[in-house]
Figure (cartoon, rainbow, N blue to C red):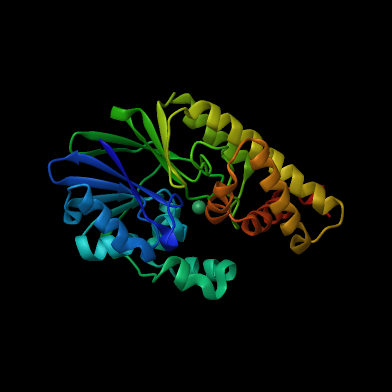
Length: 302
Ligand SMILES: [Zn+2]
């Protein structure tokens, strides 16, 4: 049984969604925690569903970006929750200093407001899980799906009983059934592995997806196909700007206008544009794609 909790990031609905799975009597599991700044809201969300936060025994981390698992350390500290993550991410949950350094380069003095406090998780509460590992909790079975592309340490999780994939960010950002769009933050964007990750999810023929930004996607295959097309379209669009001699700074406002036009042309209501931007800021995507092109295809960009 899957329940959803809106973490109300910065007081706003529909930006960060946390999934709670009942695995057995007094055995609950969360997929991601949201940032530390929403910890109390999510704890309260668990209570409102009629459960005890102390019964959250397991937390599956899709990846360690602060909007997803910046608050995992609070669950570990206050409720003894065990945190499961890809080996490449697990080390940064135990010692988040490098993660804080790279996030500070992106968010600067907004770090505290956006994400709250960052803390470390004791080594014995972090469990590294490899691709294809099977996790049994109570009556539920999850399979780990290593799904890089958005982040090199990204995992999704297949819940057999519901035929659903908890997809973190690899299935994109999709608000109120609108078009799916890709989040491209630095430093790990890799389009080719992202495509392979989507193929892996497609092969499972899921009945639904659960994504962090935002919620349940009931018709997954068309959403995955549309996302894949947009990943390559948007990456090419940005490459073209660089080929025309634009700087990253010049490209950001143009990219914002381009993405807004595209969302509107696909029927996105005006009031959802700000939610898309909060979940997937254009400035971050320009930086992430600039890094991708220069690192993996330097011959194709100036
Ligand atoms: Zn992310």
